[in-house]
Length: 446
Image 1 (cartoon, rainbow, N blue to C red):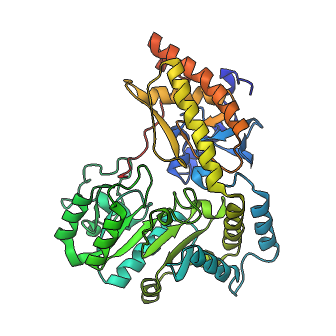
Image 2: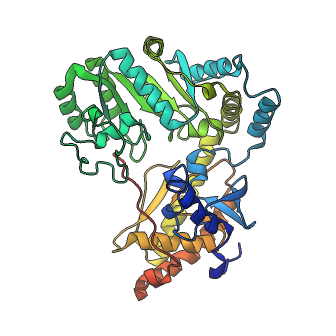
Image 3: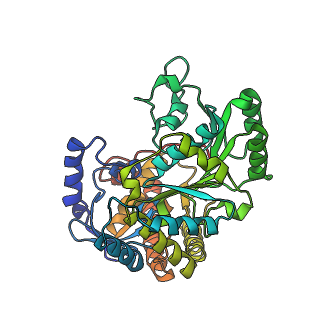
């Protein structure tokens, strides 16, 4: 791909982003898509079209997306023809009516078939709200308040209450960047964090809160694998406490294996939550669980008009069927391994020190032994953008990424790593930036 001149980094998207921030608090609806997370002042920010592994900006420039692929939601690639066909048919037949869409029942049957331990399903249209549903069901079932958790689980009050302290001040930035302003302080102490793979820490919390614990909420796996039968120990602890074990599969689900990642480890939760990849870019979420626990939803009030639209279940059915047919998990694993091997080889070639993250579906590298890693990351993003790639130090592969695509990408990485090495040698990394360094992301507990 041809290099884009430095003066062409600015375009319609960059101008629109500046305007958006005067009209929309924060500029958009999702922290992970804010331009400041990638290339402040110079990220294209908006797209006119997306197809396969490619995205076109408002100026008609095409980029290969070797970044997040819509924050991990488009596992089949952008604008998948089979999924789009199913959604278009759903729209043509009426996406909403006074009656219910039969696709809801078909999807529920499929999800329970994939996860034999589950008996019932409720739907939503986004990850954050589906986790709020799971939390509500767990508390309704147990009649308790306390939730023990690790990892990131969305924007809702129940979760951000973790950052409230008893003296009405921020709790030491437990999750930096996620402030609990607007969260009722009466929720302080109702949600308590623990670290992944730290069973001793969780045991201490279980001893402290005992039968007050309504649920243990966590991602079954994300940044590191479970060690020393961690998941099985958590399962036993939940049983001992009489608490609901909730696995948040919103990000990792469907990427490590067909279904929830927990299937790989042979540990079944009481509730599992899915969104993102299950519908390949169309709004959809599912909360699945054991009948006894899920029936508690009837003793609370969990209801919303647009949870009944037809396009979400239609997209999910088409997506799940195709993911199984093309064996998407095997493909993205292969693409991730090729990419990671390339990062290691090219870093060694140019004398850069990097560390590779554990997860294949969410492959990543970090610059190590450097004074200003954010500036170095920004320079990498900037130079990759100039060469026609939406890229950062993390990559979520899709079914549409081929080894040929990765060869093109790694050729550009070779050039850019060379530029980074030269900048480090000359000590002028920041001087080469066309704008401010990227913002750091919030911290995860796993």
